[in-house]
Image (cartoon, rainbow, N blue to C red; front, side, top):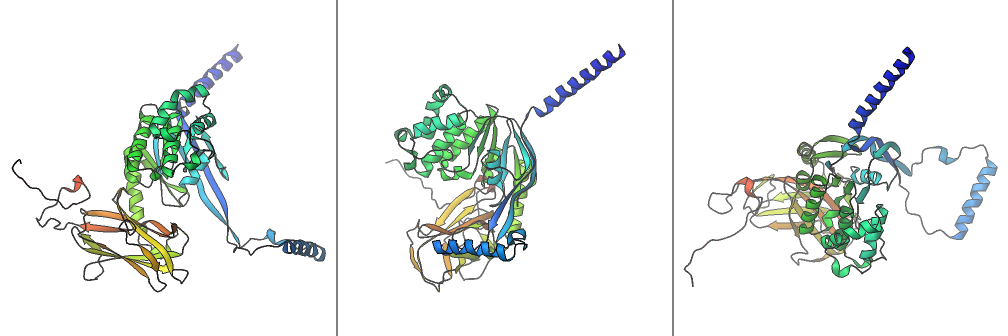
Length: 455
């Protein structure tokens, strides 16, 4: 009898503990434990064209080596200098609860996209474990999951089926998807003929409307226009707040992260640096960015492009040509973009642009020679810098960052995000000794009021 009572008590205790633990973990929809991802980078030089005789010769040489020295260790037993291990993620751990809106931020190469690909089950981790509870919809790049030969209509049903939706469920949401994407006229056109913006509109509409429990969105929304981006951010907010679904959002736009996300995770070199409230993480991220801007531009590794041109430094100068560290509102400023021509020959059809961002990495404006029809059809081999003249700098006091971008014949040659920072002090832009309140905007404009009698 005593034995039976003990068993009952132990079972009662077990089920109470089980019930308690279930309540704790039931709200967790994503759990990442010691996640790592390794890639092998090849440093081999591009080989010349291989003929059949070369293949036969190599095979014969391999057989001969085995015959001559059968007990010699093969070269693969030793470290291969032509290959290198690269850890895109290293021992990443965190948990995300149902309904959370989480921003993933970090510099290029920090591991953000690799993390999302693993969470989306596109890529397998090298070590570690990911536990996901619920259906996941991912938008990681333009046209993710689309078949180029199928029409927009067919791809909606294809994506829905991939997400596990029934045909009836897809039909129920079909009109909402088409209306949101604004592609009615092209619905029966193969998506291979869509522009990148149309791709994104339809892909996001499908991902957001087919009711996944978890929505994962990468920087791909930057392809769309400003109005569509605002619409997408609103939809992601509704998905989380009203429908209780979880959103993971990667962006370099800190304003979007601040407005959409409650918490944020900052990655750097494949590791989690901070996982806190979004505002706190953004402050730490911007501080790290500003600190890293002291690194010489030439030494920056987080750049994209062919490398035909590589920016080496950006200098700010006043009208007299003197280098300056701080600017002021209304000042005439020269920006000198020093670069290396890495082919030592003339370059054709060169375009350069600079994007200026506010302190939250929200894009204020883009200045480009192509926009002004100031074409550089030929850049001679002995020319070493571009010069940009800004008339009456129209920025209010504050700290700003800039991104530089160069193309040659339409192909990206060098692109460095957050290439540097600069400060703007108060200046007499309006010759009145006054500026609008700092919290009322970031931009100054030439304007005039007048009053007149009605005609």
